[in-house]
Length: 404
Ligand code: C6P
Image (cartoon, rainbow, N blue to C red; front, side, top):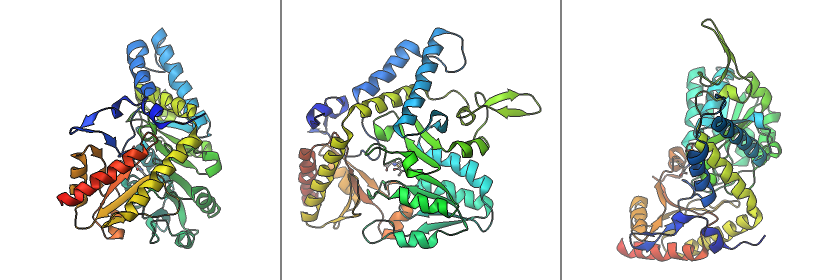
């Protein structure tokens, strides 16, 4: 399979437009990626041809919707090397983590127990654990970072102990791009007797993920960061744990038998899926997985490596620019500060030139506090970005510098 970025870009109609009179340079892929035609068309096709509820009706359209919905579950399961009963549809990573924090955290934690996270976590992998600790009297422990933005591995091993009941780690940092060696850390956590959750929001769109190889108990991710729709994601959970957990929310679909006196729960994975799900989202998620599976993922990863290498080289040579996050293993995320400039102003002036980045704390306030900064400007790259766009970012930054 050969890889040509310009051919790939043709799959993404949104990229071909002008913003503020300039060609759009979309570098906010960590917030959400753009969608290929296959995903847009799959969602459209669902509403045009087989819009119907799933698992409920005895008619033709519902039959197609249900089969597509369940086939997609199997495809998403295969995508991360899990079995279909272990894949629960969620609204996204945030909901997946909340589900585990509520159903495992609050059930298993007691005073004296510890939950271990790292300093670079997104709020979605902090606040649910903080709340679970508050509710149970457990303590939240945080692994510090090293100077380069990697997690301090020695400190991780020191903090991991027999009181650690849950370890919740990002696979990849959304603010710094750091890739954590999760398989190794999950193994130690399990040896210490802890349950493990990996926040995979920023991993799945960048490299293949194999939950069996990682060995984690839970893995949460969102479709919209891997070219699928917003409002849909998946939570992988180990079958025996899911079986033992109480339901997250209750209502229709997640039940087996209901009487006014008591209710029994449906089998996996439906026990965790009350109410009418985001069927269009699932259809689009499936299209995104099939589209990604058709790509040469090794070539995509090399292309992204080339983008971040070029961006880093430019950034190092750019006077007054400080890169925030220099870990040895990184995905295509360049967080930076410009001397004397507020990141918000940098973002606005880049936008005026058609360059879309995110600025601020990136939902990582404790990380920013630990770095002693209010936030950063963040250029996050994806497979359809080009080396010309990297050059364009730095040309635009030259102008920002002169404006400021
Ligand atoms: N980060 C960003 O701009 P949801 O919103 O549920 O799909 O994903 C939440 C989430 C959890 N963990 C990590 C590591 C993330 O990066 C995100 C989402 C976006 O960085 C939006 S805040």
